[in-house]
Length: 379
Image (cartoon, rainbow, N blue to C red; front, side, top):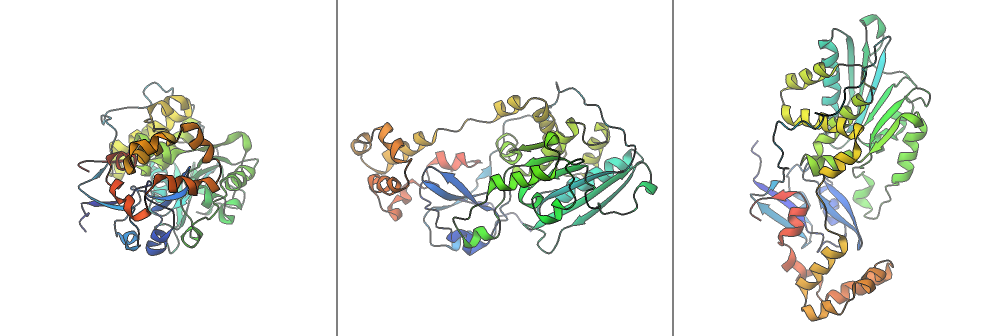
């Protein structure tokens, strides 16, 4: 099926967060965007399936782009993020070792499990994988049981028993906080590497102000695992900013866990498994190396992320574009920032902007917000 040469973008300067796009499309790629004006919407370009049902809503904030591509960082394919990262001590496999991979369908959870199984096979170790994808294979909860052993006698069942997880790779924290995962964890045994970026849940479609309860979700995962061996990381945000695609987040988690000595497999076998998979080989190797660098030196990874203009700067620029400059000059920065601290003053700011919602369509095609959403090309 041909890939349409078209992308959909939501301009946050126009979006009012009504949520009609989520209702029309029921799509996990429509995500919340928290701003000083409240919650708005954005399109996750990495998970968008391009059925364009989200544009069926009556909204002027949507911009359809032809010829736009996901912006990729100017990194040569030979870039090795882990060139100066020391090799960890790989633990010996003395008995069965259980890795539980959780996430949502369509993000590569099953691929991570398959790579682990193949790497074990290349080392002549026993391995079993059991994937629980459910009915909603794209967007639904996905679980992969990966069991490693010295021989087949160590692995009596392909599924991990209650409290038997040695390593939790939580590609989605909401799935990791669910009962199906919590029953398998043991605070005295389980280590965890968790992606802190949450994908929208089903209730978000019907409730535009749905509370994702990030703190409670993280607390649930930490309480079920060893607190001294639990890491919660914004790998999806880092992958999007550095690698240009959020799909690299899961491979980063694997690289992070391996660098901490939580995966009893050799680096060469893991790299060979990526090669045998035959999909985006340099990309996946770079993502794995980026995860290793994150485990060794987080500051070095954060330094690779491009800077984002301050919210106040983007806001003032939008005001100046939509009204005479003399009116924008009458809004001192200190007064505007103070007003934004109170929800009731957001309405006053909109009136100050001086334009009704549908007349703000003139700012939709400004290159700055489009490129800020990870798009490039002739916009």
